[in-house]
Structure formats: structure tokens, C-alpha cells
Length: 320
Image 1 (cartoon, rainbow, N blue to C red):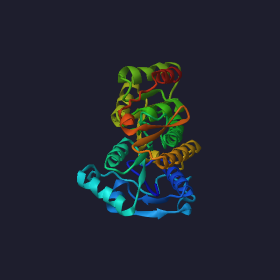
Image 2 (image 1 turned 180 degrees about the vertical axis):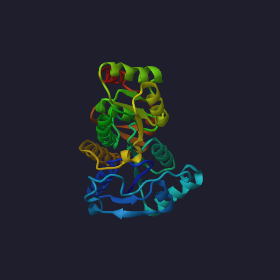
Image 3 (image 1 turned 90 degrees about the horizontal axis):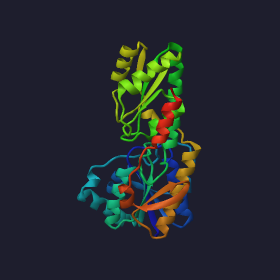
Image 4 (image 1 turned 60 degrees about the horizontal axis):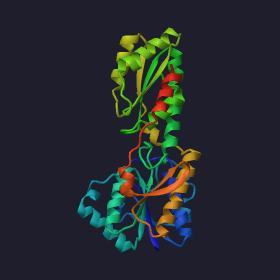
């Protein structure tokens, strides 16, 4: 192992730069040449990369986004695209690649490993939907961003005795909306993993709290459910409470990563380089109970992750 590459793929997540920094510094300190590959697998296919040094990653640990940029690539899913990526690796003498991203990025790393290019994957996604990992890079920062935004919305909601219906990102998973919903004291949290009845779980809950003199409300909804504007209209019609819908959108992806995400990203990036140096391939680096582990990518992709229903039950009982 003499030369490695690092790329970020899929949706960006705060902390990706901290992971890049750890990979570059750990690689160079262990005598490796490190290439930064721009725009994910596209850069690998198109030979869009540059050799990085210790100063290439100075002052990026605190920055959101990714200095290597990110993208999704349909071409990479084809055999022609895969062969182009393999050819670039051979021409550049790249012996292994660290891939930072979500499950779609992991599938690309798996396929690249099968074509003879060793890959180690690092889970970086605000959705926290990687089953082998307790926390993914970016999740903590995104959750704190949602809490900050909803706290600001609550200020105006409280001032006007309104109901705020807030859509939170997370793709098909409810980890972000549940965590932020608890931290914000949301009256109701709607997410795909927990069946709900709108009349019972929103309208009736609001009416019940109205009887205890509550006059302003926050309802938090996963983007997988959507329809927040229709929900706000229905709430106003059925409860008489003036209601507004807010879609937080991509503000949740940006911003300075929290200390927790910077530390997590640094640990995962460092361990990814250790695995490549040890001759490992087709692995996912993860944390479970604050320990660094690694799994075969096939195994990681086949794992399932479930919402803590006791956590949801607690949220509903203490936010009434």
C-alpha cells in the first residue's frame, strides 16, 4: 500500500471535512501518497483528482460541506463507468480508496472492491440510517441545527399563539425528527417508522393540551411523510389555532460540525487508513457503544436498524 485516494459521495454532511483531514494526515504520517478525488465517483472516472499534503487539509476541521465536493453518478453504476474508474486507479497507482458517504456510496465501494480496488467506507450522512453504526457523521450537527431553527420558530409561534408544522429531513428514516422533536418538546412527532392517526395523534392531542391552557404548538414531521402545508390547513380548520408550515430544507445539511461530529469523523477516518495499511478491503468503519468496529460491506448493507419505540413513547408522554 503506497498510494490511496479519498472521496465524498452522495449528500454532504457536516464533519466530512474532518474525516478527509484524518485520512490525509494519517496516510501521509504512515508514508502514503494521498489523492483527493473531486465530486465522488465522477472524479474517479474522469481522473479529476490532486495529490494532497499536510497543509491541504489545514483549517477544514471546522468547515461544513466537503472540500472534495460531492455528487451522485448513474454512470458509475454501469460496467463502462466502473472500468473507467478502475483504469484511473491503475494509471495513478492508487492501491486503495476511502469512501465517505451513505449506503449508496457503500454499494459503489463494494463494487469497486470486487473489481480489484480495495475500499474502506465511512458512514457520513445526516439521516443516521446506516444500520451498523450508532451515529453517522453529520447526524449530531444536523440535529442541533434543527433544534436551533425550531427554537427560533417557537419564538414567533409563542408570540402569536400559533401552531408550527415543521418538516425535517432524514430521507426514509425518522432518527433526525425524533431526536430533534424530543429536544424541542414537540407536541407531536410524525415519522415513517411509527404508524399514526392524524386525528388522534395531532388534532386530539392539541385539543387535550388546549384544555390544560396550552396555546401554542410545534408539530414535527419527517420528510418521508411530507404534506405539512395540508396538515397546517387541517389543524387550523379543526382546532381554530392559526397554523403555519415550514420546510427547513437544506439548511439542515450545512454549518460548522459539532465537537461530537468532528471527533467521530477523526476517529473513523484514522481507522479507515489503519485498515488499508493492514491489507483490508470491502469494509465499513463504524461506532457501536463508542467503540470503533468494522464490518464487511455486504454485512453492513444487509443489517437493519430500528427506532427506539420506548424513546418515542417517552417523547409523547412528556410533551403533552
